[in-house]
Length: 188
Image (tube, rainbow, N blue to C red; front, side, top):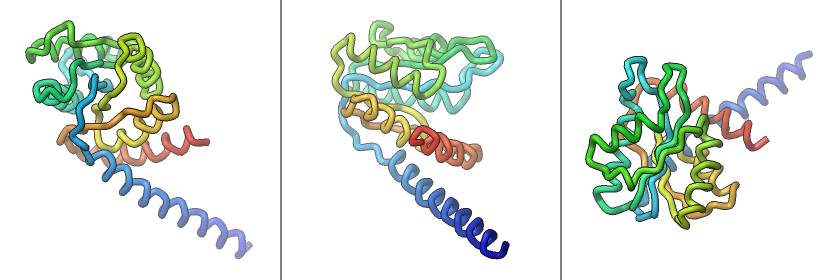
């Protein structure tokens, strides 16, 4: 029995060490903006509030895409999200925000069926293929970027970089843990 507890303790220690190494890696990777140009920025959706306003996290993502567009780093912006429990299509709300911030409507591509990260990746690749876009910049929180880029590359889309807004909150600790679980769940 003593040996069993020792094995369990070793496994738990290994998981904790793996979590810490993974967390450090995804933080560094997500905050490392290579400042490259691309055909399109892909903004992953997030919460729209019950009153129809955007969460601060989602606004920060969109503001980052506006910055990329205004600096001529991207030619177009894909906004991707699903129908939130609050009753709003995230893609549509994101499009409205971009238009209100002087992004031309013809430069905004809306995906209202990006219900999760995997769907956003699949739908974005389909959109980019139809428009012959060859490069993209993922716009999401820093802790999300490693998994997003891995999903794109797993689908054969190699020319993907990332840019994350300078928006941090206490919830990031939970989100880093969630990303750790999601990353290895997909790997298995």
